Image (cartoon, rainbow, N blue to C red; front, side, top):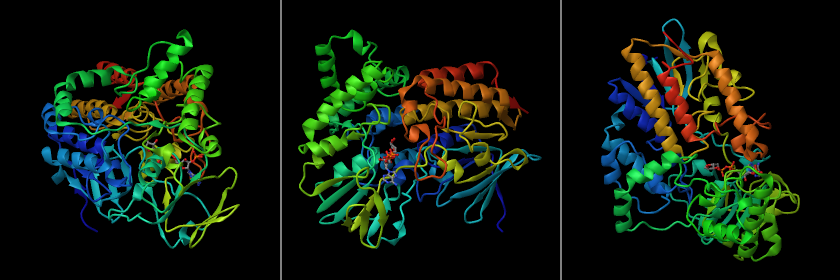
Length: 536
Ligand code: NA7
């Protein structure tokens, strides 16, 4: 057994969050190491290499804001950056700030155990290497535990098959191929739009349709980029002011107070605009009031009927079990038009469920579909899945997986009682998931690194959420679910995943109170001497 390596801090994950946390902790003068399962930095943008993978956030709202120099150096080439460019960006940041030498790649963490006597975490990799630290920070992603479908025979298929998250690093030749796609969430919708024109035959297996809206991506000209660079102060001021840290904030009017003709004109304008405006820039009651929501859903259904030529297919693509925006809205490029192509077919799994997968393809209750390639766009064990894949043990050997069995509990989504000195950055019940990730991540990283700096300066090396503070945070997190239509819909936001045992009921995964309220709470806690944390 090699000797255990000792550091002040360990960060698990070198994605958007881990990269920035590393930068901050190095600035505190700490000895830090990042343990990353991939062969390079990038996290989400390292793994998701499927065709069509790109931001649904405006590129210039997704980049880091912490360095004015970085903002001026980096040129985005599209309003919604594609995955290869984003991966280049994250590599650029890594090298720009000399972070790579502190990162260990191909280092998948198997377990993390708290040594109560020493106040230290002991972390073991899957290859047996061992590390030890005071400050343990997880930056393991909210959508990083991919879930292939639980379908009998899935391992039998002899063609190529991959989950979108594990898309091969070598180019996949789709030209002239018979391709099946299972899943029509944000990922499936991106893939389908991107490959429909290229493949010989495309069959989409849909269990539940989602309400999708056009992304309206376009290139950024050098002149536009110069204007963007000159406007970063205003851009980040807008991001700070909106509930979800996007460039789109709700229209303060209620739909019902706007005359019908004007609301339709407004909706046409939203539908024709790039990005999430159609979801997050809508009348404020559209996501709160069932009647307003139903009216807007009918508007979008009309758009689907206009864009899809075959009326029967169009009806299948219109969700009937939930209203617009109550699940994550996939933004699409030529998604609905794909179904107008002769060689693209939609299979509704409610009519003809999948019975199994065999050597040559997919068997439904009605027929056998032969494929060269099957793409599983079947989603993630969201938010808690990445934690469950590491054996995390706190005081007295208590397991995080056991504590979270009925759903996660935390204080501010940042700490869990019984797991001292572990910071679950961008973890369950923080504001990150319900927002544009990077700005939320930046505020959490800023706060946590300042907290660690404070503790270090006081000679304090153990910090733990108090049980009362944790319980109060549960009530607060729950209270927002009670107010939102989103909570009434089954999706990964509310903890459902048919491919994971037991994930068939509501779990309170996300703080839905908005980024400004979350930041305000963090500030108040710090100003009150880090209220709710036991420090020693
Ligand atoms: P999602 O949004 O969870 O979508 C997964 C899709 O796969 C969804 O349409 C599921 O249908 C479908 N699915 C899952 N399992 C099966 C099985 N066994 N059979 C048929 N269909 C299945 O994941 P995405 O990757 O698209 O998006 C995740 C987030 O990543 C996204 O919101 C962005 O923020 C980035 P269901 O709706 O459950 O009936």
